[in-house]
Image (tube, rainbow, N blue to C red; front, side, top):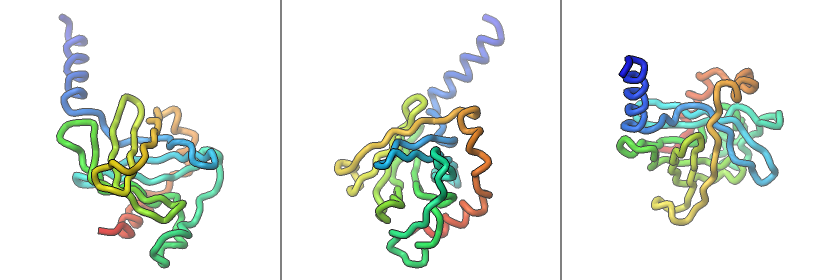
Length: 168
């Protein structure tokens, strides 16, 4: 066996042992009005977070007018973390014990994310067990697919500032 094959086997087995990585760019499901967004997942400490930064149709960011906290109603959805505190379950492709915030309703839900190939299943539910909720499927984007949207990505300091708005 040559060295290239050995390296390939090691790389592939490492991915299987440790699971896929959640970090990266995704295109969300189509919303009620057909809108889709570009979202980035990132890791901070041992938790995972996501924020949106571009609308596929080119529409402008919206204010968080339905937020229960009046002080946050003028913030924009662009650059604001809305999936937070997800923790990887062991070495699996499941991330749970997080929350997801819905800008349209101003409501917060329990969140669980499962990676399956080049898709992400986001389950939002009103109960912690995930029984009473719904699952949305997002597509992981390649570098080439996300390229047209990167110019709309906010400075990361904006994203970090929004972490302070998350309820403990």
